Length: 563
Image (cartoon, rainbow, N blue to C red; front, top):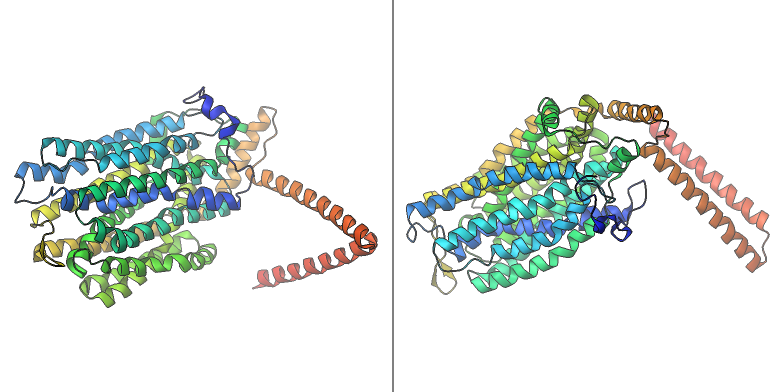
């Protein structure tokens, strides 16, 4: 029966998805993929961005004058070492998802389960006692792992699979990828990057009680968003596999072999590794860069302006991105975008202390980085290609590896940054006089600049090179045609009728059109009866207008095809 197969909770129709259509719907895009992921994203962004600030500035855990060498070594190393636990829990969670069999699918139930876990784990991370002791360090390590190795693993593994499992329709899947990446990055990024430095940080400062109160409120706000994601997503690929009799357990060894012998999959993993390490180190180092290099400590404006300009292209940029992706393909647009972003980082590195040029560079960087929003669709393409090439779906293992990369990169980023701060002599903020704080030494400032600008520059070039060789997108029409034919043949061999997602969508659209037409005719008859009009005459007028409209559409389509 599989994991959760006997669960009454997920067997209940009350917990069915609110999405019923074979096609992706507007509610699904906006509520399931845009707004839904925001809760977990805000928690994750807040913790990645400010947990190190909380440790260094509130708990004073990185000051070499206050702690022994052993303490500092543990503080620098624990985020990296703890990722060994992450690796294990991610692999286990991937296999759990792969073996999950419920009415609600195999990934969606875990999103619902993760919702309260995320909020509870987040709150516990900021309930660390202020007294510097061995207990403080132990609790930091335990709560850090509780969030990243357990709660966020359960959520992120499931969330990562929703685009690949949502539909086999490439265009619809690309749209969902764009929406979910906008939901994860755009508004949460703006909230954390603008609201925190402009409003919260000047108020919180290094006051322990204020930090604790703020995080409890944020954790409470995040919970309903994740529940929203559960109810407005749908696993059509899982349903299609079930109807075709394809739901079977594939051993971990078989999945491992299929993935690591696929060139496209390996390239996608390398891309994700560079992407996540770069993103996390930039996020962690941003407040430090604004406090100690570009601006002054918690001035309330430097980080706000830098983030606002950096996030500005995300609003209008997505409308420019989609036509480009449709015309040139995801891969080509990403290559050009990453090279533009890399050039912008060179400008920022040269003028790291010039606010005007930093704003220009950040704006151009954001435009170049926009194509990264479609990487989830590339992952889905890669999984389809593995199924075509190897005959199995490796959703569980892939989600495991991707989530391992996501969580390990956080540890790598924090470990590198912690080590850099403590080894260059970082000092916790001290109020020298009214509104005036201490400054960091030159070595610390140089390290912070390299973390915020230099490492992303290296990663962007690497990502562009990887995309040059990742050509799975070009093979998708052939792949999907072959997979549909394979599934149809297997269903017919069992004496069953198999309908692809496209065929189901076409039938559904045909039925919707029929119902809409019946309602139109009914409403027109009622109108004619009410106003004393002749139904046949009014119907003839309608049909004439409809024919004229179709003729114009056909002419436009022919003209477009000719071009």
